Length: 302
Image 1 (cartoon, helix red, strand yellow):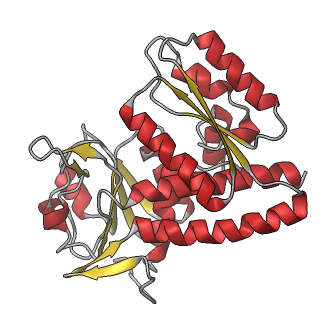
Image 2 (tube, one colour; image 1 turned 90 degrees about the horizontal axis):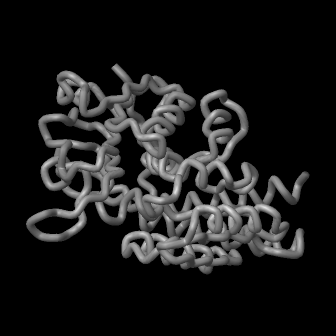
């Protein structure tokens, strides 16, 4: 049986009935405040601040909202941000040419292209085109390879944010049983690797997993990242487990955002749980800011 030790309750973890709510907004605000102080020091030392370039293709409302959040976070942290908007009809060649221009710009430290892209553009080719040293999303195949090989790399933002939230609980991951429900390249797989690196015993579950509820009930740490509204129900959660909800879905009845976890029923069983919205989402953007600083420092400290 794994041991759970909670030393203190940080400001970003608040009591709610029998569970502790991990407040991603509060934790994110605290970390961005720390980064803003760090950026002042970086400017004094290097003569400039980190710079992040964001390319937005088309007018997808969700993508526009995500990009606004990223630009706002840059402002809060004291970064320079560059927003490049391109029409839905932009050719793949023109998009790749813009990425190449940003790759060559010495004053740009991080480059990201907001996904998804229009169907006529090969997303894999676009991700591959971003310079490895500017890949703040951690999606470049060389970054992915380095992650799995245990070499220095830029870690994907959402899994990195989840690990920081678990740390905030004061929980000792080493030796714990962790179940990741979801096997995407962006969240599920890298999430499992970061947990392995922290010495957890990790199971990756998915839509074809037999006895999924039983597998989930064995978890000290349960991470839901499948994109199915309220898929994780109370009977699938071990009492006292940490439950991290990465999913973002739209409730068909109310139209409101909800996660992959049935929050209202699971919150009375879990020791710690993240809400949707206000949980993992803000931390993803905050980790993007951390990755931008990391890319900046790697360049400046060469």
